[in-house]
Length: 100
Figure (cartoon, rainbow, N blue to C red):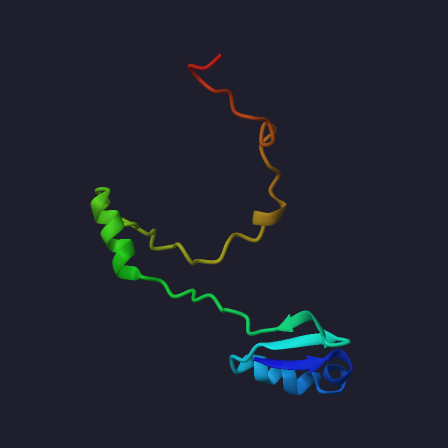
């Protein structure tokens, strides 16, 4: 671990950040007293574990996620699609049955 004064860090910030990217932790001091650290950020892995997902689905009785896709799924939408008015009750909450 390196110790650097704030004054020195001000002039060498790029080099200190590069050192942190390489796994080093740098302690910044003011008048010899530690006040802050520059340290590497732990990056999260966003890898998808497909096997675990498949095992989870099978455990819960799901054979396949998508059973059928319409042949025209990716056909262009009609020209008037975006200007067609919405139904009058579009923004009204739906009534629940069986609960009061």
